[in-house]
Length: 246
Ligand SMILES: C[S@@+](CC[C@H](N)C(=O)[O-])C[C@H]1O[C@@H](n2cnc3c(N)ncnc32)[C@H](O)[C@@H]1O
Image 1 (tube, rainbow, N blue to C red):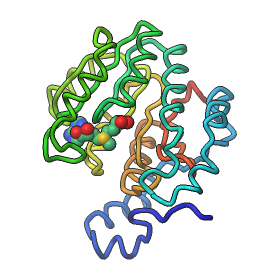
Image 2: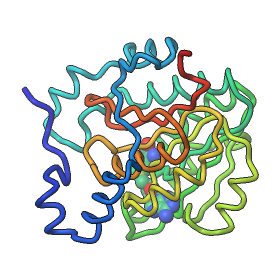
Image 3: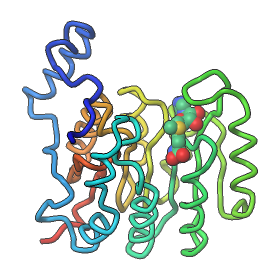
Image 4: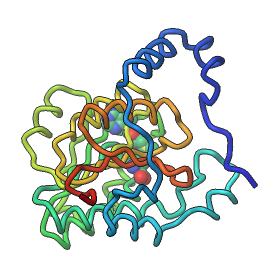
């Protein structure tokens, strides 16, 4: 069985349907503005991350799942928890999740924050009628996060608001998870907003959504990070130099 087909896979069809985005992508590609894609076996990835990725391997689960949105995501929360834990052991600072929905990942990250005496910042407008929100997601989030509320800062706003960007810049961070508004402009803004994260920045849905994958590569290049998009993982990871083998 093959991996499911991806969104925006054919560049010609994409450019005909979205000419300005096609030209924008072509220009970045030609001008060398894209980080190279590495898979989870990249030689210079530190041993701890390599082990974590092989412990949460999705080769078989991704192939068995024909739905492109979910393929490679079965063990994603274990990977994120592992990365957040590794980053909290190595670096000072808090954690951030941009886009939290009903908090299923937030509670897992909050557990890591509590264990390391850090805080988890959660940013989401929970706007009824917008992407992924139909009405009671905020209440569901609050109920789920309640046991960890002493260690969580909830910023109910768009991650692109100037005041949110300013407040986030002031917070030292050890780990970032970007999973908010799934358009190129917002995803780029979100990655750059946590660009000062000392450890890993992970971005969801970049395997099937090639717009998100593209813009994450642009951001990785700008931030000077290794770009890891394993074909069997739903998310990508922007890895700082300090987590690479010399
Ligand atoms: C895919 S869900 C997040 C899922 C969550 N990270 C998880 O792992 O369970 C996307 C979330 O992004 C939020 N979102 C949409 N626009 C946003 C924005 N401008 N800033 C921050 N979050 C946004 C939505 O409200 C929604 O809750």
